[in-house]
Length: 332
Length: 65
Image (cartoon, rainbow over all chains, first blue to last red; front, side):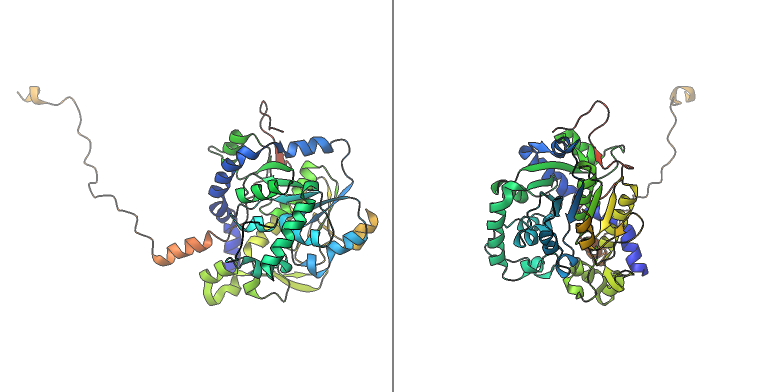
């Protein structure tokens, strides 16, 4: 790994706090009035008859490259489906209705788009044209948004939203409007034993249970499967933590910010990782690399089996077993 | 007389009277770097609780349901 990238990875916990903590606290205060149910209700409902397996559908590029969702639909998989918010639109278009959708990021406007945002009539933010999480959302944006509004309105009442109290009120309003039952959780921001712990302040304010997030919504979905539902065999798809080899740099999540910082040296801030089972070199940015390291750490600690059925990306190592999705579907 | 005028207190040692230096204003480059860096973080930070993935309060506390 290049020195510049290493320095950024090391700074990632602090940078994340700087980026999100204040707005997450403010959002938690706003969301307090909407809290009726929490993840404890889901844990109680699951106790004693935990589902034998689950598939976590994250929104990495392999989800589309490998057509993972259509394989799940074709196999008529009967286990639990837990989708990251960014994967919901693709799932619904492919006819896969998740049991749960997890949402975490406090961004004020972008996250509501993953549920179809009825409040946009023009698209000024180019984020959805630049992202690789759901390429379909980047073309004919207003039309796609309208289609997604209708899909979420139709299926929302049958999908449980597992929402961090950090999310914007725009997400809360949209999901309430679509009739999605919401189950809340607080993300663990810091050590609850430390003086002035932000996590403890929020817990004291709203009494909502706190869950490790892993820093990103895909990881949080895995934590939910294991830590709340108690599922022992969990497959992940679309969990790339990286960009496909042919991805232009300007289509990566943090390109604008890193380009502004490093100019012509921006490529130095990315990290190349060779995936031995795919025999491909994928590349990632410091934030995604940090997520990957944290995810592997969590899976090593967990009392469950984690199968990486992404068939791409950089998630491999102790704690995760790589497995073709079709083999997982045939076994579970 | 000298005894009467003698103070019953001690003068504090002369402090360094140089005014405290104000932090030098951040250069434009530094400000720019900080602003850009602040956008590079993840969705939310991650803190482990050992093998505990969900925390519902200390003994005597109970998270709501």
